[in-house]
Image (cartoon, rainbow, N blue to C red; front, top):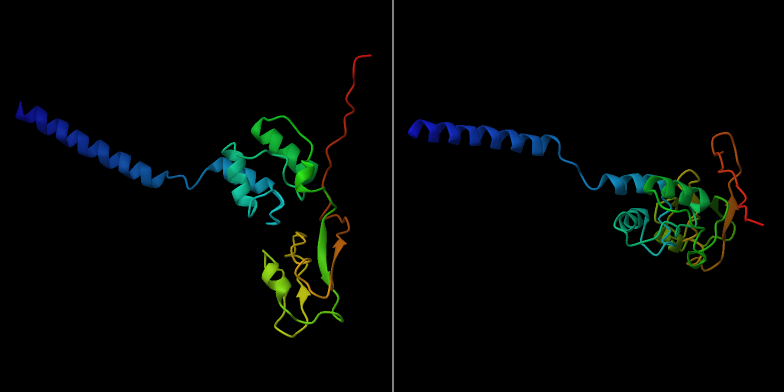
Length: 183
């Protein structure tokens, strides 16, 4: 009887140790669905979707708290990719969140800039470089085109310039399939 008890206790310790090791070794950080959704979003961190950034919006989509058509920078292409990933029906962009625009980048007129740093404070991705009472400039590869720097500028020296399509920036567009109705 004692030997059976010792065998059971030893077996429990071995299985417990194996489960503990497996829990540490195969731990999943966060929700993988949220990461997949976040990878599709444009990472502009603009807040037009009603959330403070792309990751909170991805979390809300995964949790069923937000619809997939609230991201103007992602546009129709982003909505289609989200619909494909999640197996949901495609819906056009929600007009309450804005309209789809071509990808653009901020440009600062160096002759007009007064160096107030308000645009630097508003930029969510640190794409504007400069110092107080000095001219500022936009680091093009970092700029997401979120337009959050436009409103705080007191002298309106920032404009949005569309990014030209090059071999590096070109993307395949979904074909437009006309909907046929029964006549």
